[in-house]
Image (cartoon, rainbow, N blue to C red; front, side):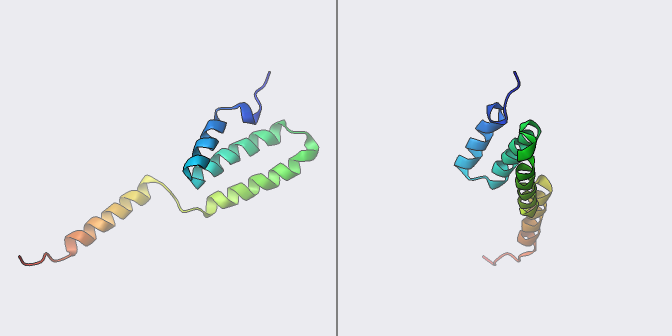
Length: 90
């Protein structure tokens, strides 16, 4: 018997993300559930799910990028600013 989207390991991730307020993680879990549901649902329900999936994708794309390059760039900028600031005479 095939697992439904709500019986997969993604659901605990969704619940955890929702509880802890990480919007990107919530949307990524919802994207997975919507994608799996599109395959498993009755054909007449697919257009609604496809629309939801597209909306989830659009919202994910609108979020700021959360990756190491951004964090490294932020740290480098802070370090550069700190090093260029003259030290107070003391």
